[in-house]
Image 1 (tube, rainbow, N blue to C red):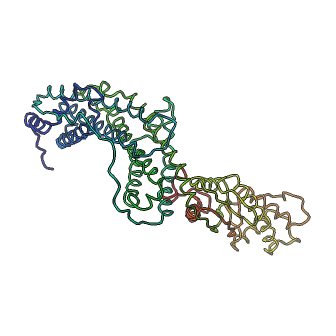
Image 2 (cartoon, rainbow, N blue to C red):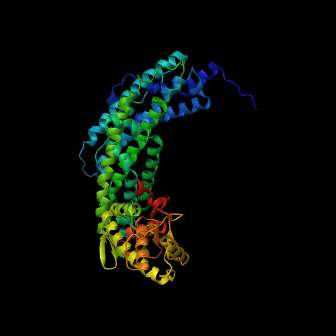
Image 3 (spheres, rainbow, N blue to C red):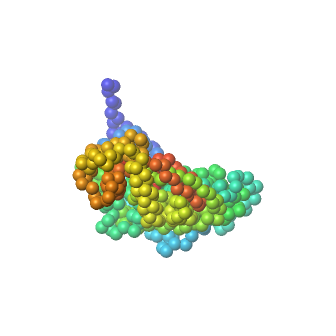
Length: 513
């Protein structure tokens, strides 16, 4: 193993002093500013860039594990994280008029201003402490001058005219279908995160251990970023975008949710990495005087999670309206769930899928019509299917040729023989082994055949056996829903042949959220 060379403190101090010159110059100015003075994108962008470079340098020399330098590194990280979070919120604030957001029940701009002031306070305190820490380390501040234009962001009103020729693309129905469906899928996957926005303070701890963890937020951030990227690549500037103005409204909601997720992930990261995961070190003072952890959590829940949920919900309704405008009605024939038909699990998945799109889908069984968005309707269909199975059992018993009316002393043995014959013929499946049957007939029917049929019906009702027959139903409705229903059917409606839960394809996994 190669011997690791240790850099001297003097040499490292000179290196940091040279490389952190611009960061310290920014901090030296920010520490004496008021909150509103530093809330400009030029300043926060430069602060983030400088803090990121210095943090990389500190990490290259393992400063986080050195008692003399770990505090300087922690303050640099705070400046990097919160300058980036502030930049995201300023981007949202300035882009609001172009986003065309639908009205919601809360004042988004006022909430954004509150979080920005909170962030500015952290940056001012972190700047003061960084300057103090630099002094204690013997780092010379130099004479870095902050450009005055960084403290102002003068933006004249108006936008440039859209005079580029619109590109041709797929038909508008296809574009709306792809985007709106993708958003609805993401909305379904985000339900647990949106629910955190309605949480009470005493519930925060549970959410911080689950749906509001950094890992979870970062995953959704990436998904919404991908959706925004797809829009900008295939829809922005096209004729479709000009034909349906709701596409621009949807783009605004995708963007605001994405940027809120970006900043929320930074808040969650700071809470998990820095506020609650401090390493014991005699040279590191508590960071409670830098960031109020309780306030950080409150804003993470009541601002970020709440507004993410509100804007997703508003856009869900928009997407369903858009889809209904371009709906294509189709019909598809699918097998019923193999294990016990439309019982709880498959019925719930089917109805959840249909409700996600918000369009009407009907299910046909013989001459009966059922609402596929309602689990109870599917349960009702299952009653009809079970009635058909009971009639089939009577015919199968009669055709089995097993029952001998003259030798019927052991009723259980006769039933077992009939079941074995039907299993051998592929007409019946058995879910309980060994199969427990009654010693006595459940009814006082006149014939042994009728008594055996009655016992098989009892076993069918209890889910111990089932008729193995390729029953099918027809679904009629939005072609997009039918395509997903076909995919769901192809994976057994989420079950194997014995009724065990199995993974769903990525496209459908949100149905279980």
